[in-house]
Image 1: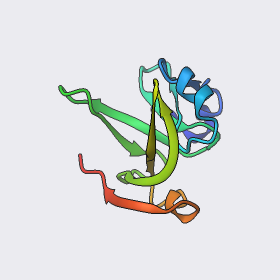
Image 2 (image 1 turned 45 degrees about the horizontal axis):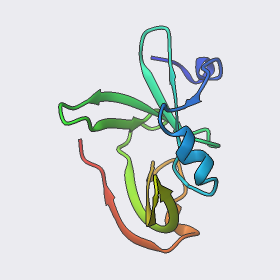
Image 3 (image 1 turned 120 degrees about the horizontal axis):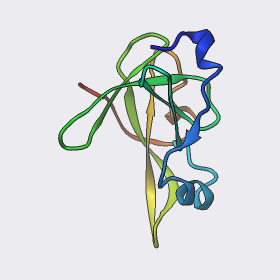
Image 4 (image 1 turned 90 degrees about the horizontal axis):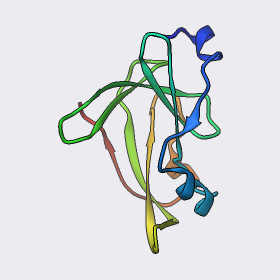
Length: 120
C-alpha cells in the first residue's frame, strides 16, 4: 500500500467512461480519478481533491468497496440537488461519496436529500 509520500508519485486519471460525463458536467461534485501503485493497489479520489480512497474490493455485483486512506474510515454518501446530464437525459440529483472524518459534507453548499453511511 502506498504511503502519503508515495501517493504524490501516483498519476491519477479520470476513470474510463467518465470523460464525457466530466465534459458535460463541469460543475459535478463527484468525478472519480484513479491510480494504481506498483503493488497493484487501486486508489480513487474526487477530481480536484487530495483525499484518497483505497479500493478494498469489488463485489460480485460490481460494487466498489472503498475506505478513506487517511483515516481508514467508511465513506458516507449524500444525494444532493445538482443538475447533471447523463447520456441524453437530465438528472436533478447527484450522488457524492465523501469521508465524514476528512472531508466537508458536500451538502453544506448544496441542498441535501439523503445522507447515509456506506456499509461494507
